[in-house]
Amino acid sequence: MTAPIHSEKTSPIVRLWRNKDSRAVIIQIVTMVVLFALIALIGRNIVINLAAVGKEFSFGFLLWPAAYDITFSPFIEYTNQSSHLSAAVVGILNTLLVAACGIVLASILGFTMGILRLSSNWLINRLVYVFLEFMRNVPILIHILALYALTVTLLPTTKKAIEMGGGNFFLSNRGFYVPSPVYEPGASAVGAVFIISIVCVFIFKRWANQVQNKTGKTYPVFWISAGIIIGATGIAFVAAGMPLSWDVPALKGFNFKGGMAIKPEFLALWLALSYYTACFIAEIVRAGILAVSHGQTEAAHALGLKPNRTLQLVIIPQALRVIVPPLCSQYLNLTKNSSLAIAIGYMDITATLGGITLMQTGAEMETMLIVMGFYLVISLLISAFMNWFNQRIKLTER
Image (tube, rainbow, N blue to C red; front, side):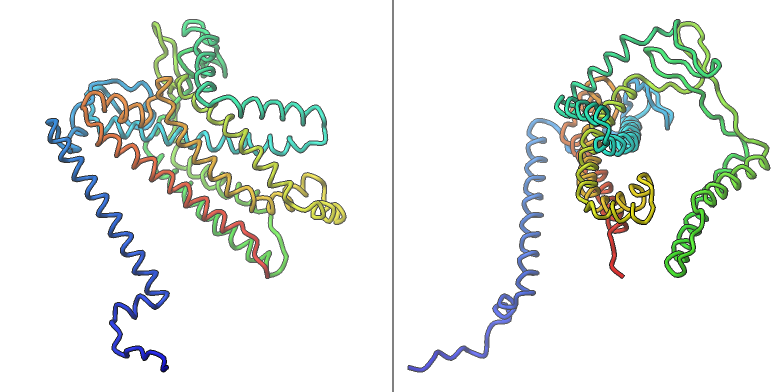
């Protein structure tokens, strides 16, 4: 019997499907079409169901007057006559503020406790271990509520506020009152000089690294960079006539006037998110350091490096390859856990747009879409930055 003869006039679609690369592209295109069709179907059903109960899918409510107060708005002016859009912006800025401050403090505490967890001192090692295990195994919401309760109940009233810094700082159960800067004409020029000096520092640092890679010659990058920033900004500040003054808080009647108030809700949320996340970061740092071969430490000591320099120059740079990927997850967790602020009345995006605005307008679908979109964008930005940083610090073979 003779083998069957395949027709030379095969369909172009069949030829594309038999090609591995084109088949992969076709499958991806079909998948995306089905996905978008499914999203469109869900959106259509939402609009129909809302119309059936007398609601219209619209974001016009964002321009309505909010008619509620926000006690903590450090970045933009807000009153109860402002729009829901303004309230949403205040909530977004408050969320970004507590997330950024929390990431900074959690990183510092986490790296410190992670290194102390490996200390040869038995007492320090055990104390850090007990602290980490206790804090990690208590839910974050309990930490927030407990810290807020302690802040409100243990701190004195406004009349008996704790005075610090020669009468410039005050601490009470209503918040931490600090002087606020008042920018005068010429301050923008000083700010421009400060930004330019930072750009110059980055250029200098890159040049110094190139020189070190080519010749081995090193420069005191830190001190030169500090001199550029402080020197240039200081000269510009003096030349502009020192365009900066301070509005100092003062007790008038039943509350403080002037200055800036850091509310107890922010303090409790910030500290709770920071030390809770720091406990997980500490274990990540400890695991990353242990992942580096002990031979690296022995080689550094053989070259005469002291323990702190060994940790700084040899161990940590290699450990970062292991630390950074899970560290990104902890930053994302901290940012999303900030939505628990609604439990203590901190006005973040969940409390403003996803809370009071939702209840006043009845726009459940629209407000939740905005809130989810906000957290999605922030999470993607954090992930993109950490991926970029991970690529920057990876070891490259020469």
